[in-house]
Amino acid sequence: MASNGLTRRHLFGRAALAAGGTVLAAPAIQTVAEATEPAGRGLVEVTLTVNGERTRMHIDPRLTLLDTLRERMNLTGTKKGCDRGQCGACTVHVDGRRVVSCLTLTASVDGKEITTIEGLAPPGGELNPVQQAFIEQDGYQCGFCTSGQIMSAVAVLREGRARTDEEVREAMSGNICRCGAYSHIVEAIRQARERGRVI
Ligand code: FES
Ligand code: FES
Image (cartoon, rainbow, N blue to C red; front, top):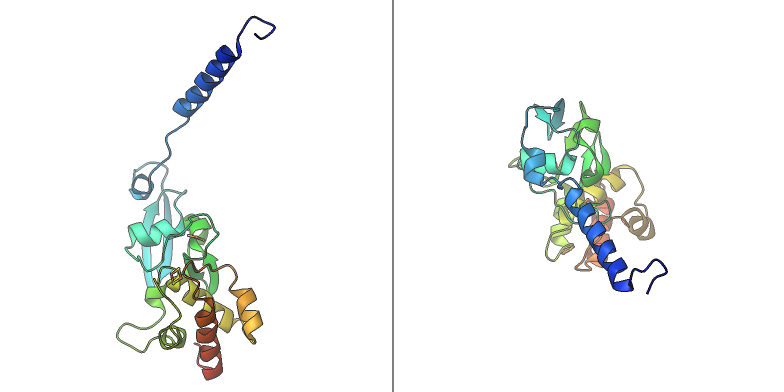
């Protein structure tokens, strides 16, 4: 019995009710579909150049670049893994620099050039040398992480940060592969580096 006459059972019951009230009172979490659908109010206009094509759209200012690419532009090669910046599956290039698109607001990249895995090689043309090396070196198993791995690898090679396998492992440490294809990924990047043809 508590000193004010309440039993432990009463106290826990009240705490549970309070917690339940908090949950019920909290605003509903917006689904991706709701966030990506133009609602008419509070939208911002952005102009993006995605894979060489300039496009203008009205978006919810909270929309991430990842959801814009996947849900608004149907560019589903960019994958949603963790959706919190921890796996690298959603890596794309913004003005040539790699970013995790799940933590990038589309409104913050207004006017910029975005490249996704779909835009890495010209349609019907040769694959990017890094894509080719991933194929030749079996740099993937299920493939879910692969587009992020390739986008990261291209950026790392362009930046000259992949001179040794050790540097590759360090620079690529933000790209997680649940299948554990790491040794093949490093071999693929080594091949691309040694052939010296990375765009
Ligand atoms: Fe963006 Fe995992 S989905 S880092
Ligand atoms: Fe399956 Fe990397 S190939 S997660």
